Length: 102
Image (cartoon, rainbow, N blue to C red):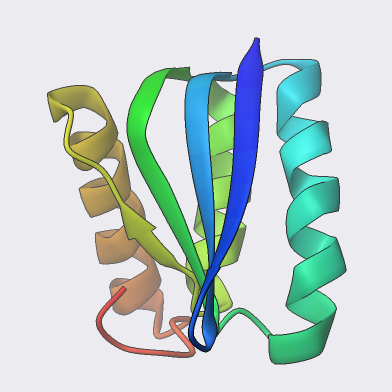
C-alpha cells in the first residue's frame, strides 16, 4: 500500500509518499505525477520518500524518469537514500538531468 499526499509550498508541489512504491502503486503515483508534470516539466516538483519502506524495480524506473525530468527526490532512510543516489548518479552520468540539485 502507498499513501500519496500532495502539498503546495510556494512554487513547489511536494509529493509525500508513505509505504511501498511497488506493484499497482507505481502506476497510481505516475498518474498523479504526470497530471502535475504537464504544467512545469518536473522543475516545480519534489518527492519526499522518507517514509517509503520499499521500492520495486518499476518504482525505481519511475523515479529515474522523474529525475531525468528535473524532479527533486529526497529521503532520509538508508535504503531510499541509496536508491536516490544511484538514480541521480545515473542521470548525471548520462547528462539527462534537466535541473541540477536533484
